[in-house]
Length: 208
Image (cartoon, rainbow, N blue to C red; front, side, top):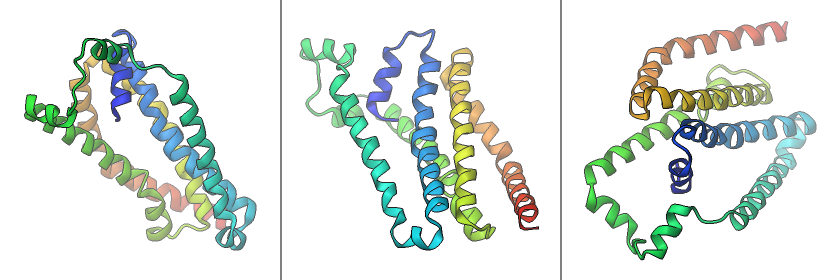
């Protein structure tokens, strides 16, 4: 989670803070994974394997260029958060924010870094590793089938993220982290086994 996301969340109304955080974080699933997987699968199906490997993959970068242009336009049109403007007008904007971040509360800083590291580790170890797991280990051809599955999984993940954000207003965010971590520990192996069996069953039906 970037600093701009944190400012947007903390600047929102406490009543809707969980919803705002869920919507913002769902962008990782919808924009980062679902859009990328959808682009890859669509281009591969459109060009075919041989043409896609030869030159079709280059068109994926045009989609990335369009997303980058949209990001620049949004940044140019969105004003600085009110919290930052107030601190800047009062002369309280730090010139060395990283040093101040660790010097004023290194314990809290380390906890925050560990939480963020865990979040991204889970994200990349699941959705990021999913194509390799399905394509290399389970040997499910064609590869576009794997990326269509990743697209659907990412869309579902975005919805669940929003639901989790809303529930964090009820359980408090500190306990929401604990609950979600425990749920992940308990369900990690069963969900992996279900994923493997369901993909193998689906592919065997398609092959026959």
